[in-house]
Amino acid sequence: MNDSSWGAPPQAGHWGPSDQRPGQGAAPAGPAYDAHHAQQTRPMPIVPDVPAHGGDQDDDRGAARTGGPPFRDETPPPSAPPPPFQASSQRPLNPQEPMTSAAQPAPAPQKKSAGRDLGAAIGVAVGLGVVIVASLFVVKALFVGVITVAVVVGLWELTSRLAERKDIKAPLVPLALGGAAMVVAGYVRGPEGAWVAMALTALAVLVWRMTEPPEGYLKDVTAGVFAAFYIPFLATFVAMMLTADDGAWRVLTFLLLAVVSDTGAYAVGWRFGRHKLAPRISPGKTREGLLGALGFAMVAGALCMEFLIDDGTWWQGLLLGLAVAASATLGDLGESMIKRDLGIKDMGTLLPGHGGIMDRLDSLLPTAPVVWLLLVLFVGSG
Image 1 (cartoon, helix red, strand yellow):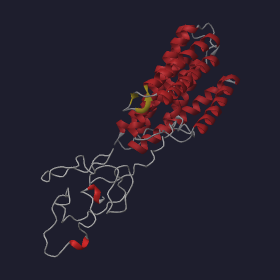
Image 2: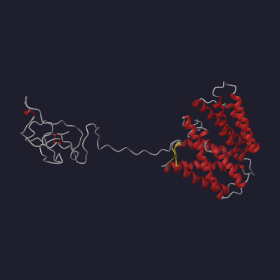
Image 3: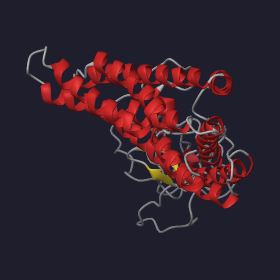
Image 4: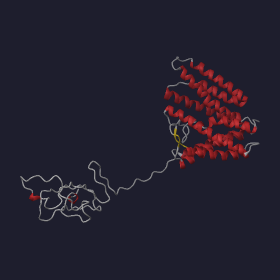
């Protein structure tokens, strides 16, 4: 800090470095305010880069500043304690505080990120859509095969993550065989066939696990029965939609509404999301995103019921879209709970930009029975 910041400017001929003599008393503890009391005042060292009185740094320690008085009061009484240094438009300096330059540029605002690889996500979604639509409208049985493959891969992902993260060994072989049988039974025999296949799959899980030591038996078979219900049994309702005369259009409506709901939640939440929906479960979901899902799905539902479903009406589509948005959101939150408990971000890496198969089935699985039931109530099962 410069001399002019601590006392009156030195006058020519009053003192200098040579005036300090051995044996003279020490300089006063505080700064002097006039020449009479400043005979023993020593110049204070310069602290660089601290602009004062307009920001110009004066390198001549013997020259007084012209930007204004160094103190609030030009003539304080000699006995008064020295007021703190106060530069114009600056607060008093704290010696413990690091000095920063006022000319530092402000950090550039960060771009809002969408949080996923959109190019890969869109490419994978288009590819899956082509496979689904082609199989759906060419041969219905082929689409049942697509459901079965998705179910088996989903079971593999879930049981693998359970074993890795929780040391839970849900038996994959009876789950995969029973899950495939469940989907086929639902398509061929309807709800009764699906329930029978579900019961037999649970029994197979209990028996298969008996071939290993009893330690952990309860948690393993519990996880196995849960997996059988969560993935293949819920997926069976998609196969049951397909059995109607307009089954392909019902399945297409189900898929469109689920995708539109997810897209609406993602787009609106990314652009306008401010209020968290369930921060402890899924920090990325917002209430604004939920409203976007509801609005998009209801509009899409009205259009689908009016133009794709035999004997359907627009108001039924509004209710259908509302139910789809709610069930899809709950399904997404449900899988988020599972992943948070397991301490993972995605169930797999099979689909670039999406994660695993289960990361795409999370909203579809609980939505399938809701759509199946409402379509049966609205237009029948024929």
